[in-house]
Image 1 (tube, rainbow, N blue to C red):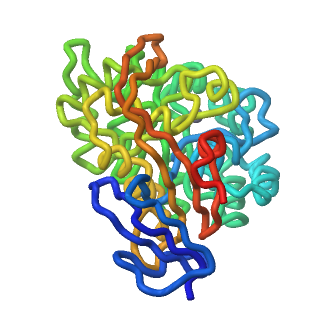
Image 2 (image 1 turned 120 degrees about the horizontal axis):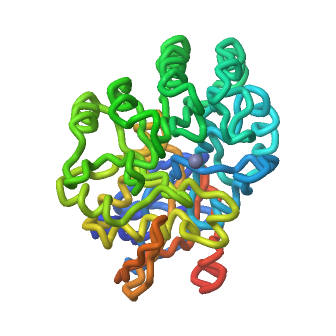
Length: 377
Ligand SMILES: [Zn+2]
């Protein structure tokens, strides 16, 4: 007897499967025989994937500007796992950890290498804020929560320090088991070439399709040689849409050249959730239909690729033994206006509508799901 069987779910490749869950794990796939305490039949009508992972969010509720609540950007919108990207540093990460224990959404953190996190917004302008011992102690205190580190490498954050904080970040990374490092790019200095040349396999560039002069494309629209070399070394590209960091034009040109993102993330916090241009991870994902990506590619970016990049080894796949984190969604074929961070709008033809988030086998109907009464008992 399983805990839950979801029958006739449509996968992103169009095929149908049943999926049985037991003890918070995926227990069987394919045509599942037997019974469960609870059974749901999607009748091939609704889509299902491994639970969506948002690799770049801000959900430390006490952060003065960039704050939000984990469940509002998580299970309420079909996202089963959120990864906070550097809201907190060593000073506040314990408090952040405690506050997120009551959330239904699974929350992880990339620790800001500055002890203040993003509270000051220019957290790397004073090198004294980078406290290597503080970082190491925090990682050792919260090993299942802190899964990597974050360094924001743009002019307003680093002040006169240029590339120096990134050298420190790489040292910290090596001193702490080579855990994932996410680097934010934005206005220069430091120049993107200088940043890219310091990154190695597994490092993540977030805001990869930003439209600022320090973008990944040359003025002629070609991929910068430094980014090409970085990708060959195994550096990963993350969207980190945010308020100011996604350009349809850069995305379209890059994707047309085969430069796809490894992960699609939102960089969501309360203000860009409520007022746009982010709204939800699903909304951000839907924008990628308009720039040449397919449903399977988009889903991979928030499941298998996200889990690989952040080394969440039990997540991101529909396979026996993996965590029973699932997202059930609809693909609405209707026109919708999408706006990027530059104020440019594109009319899309498809929208992803998350209906249910299943977290460790627990069923949460999303805000959209509640509105449409799809899964009412
Ligand atoms: Zn961010």
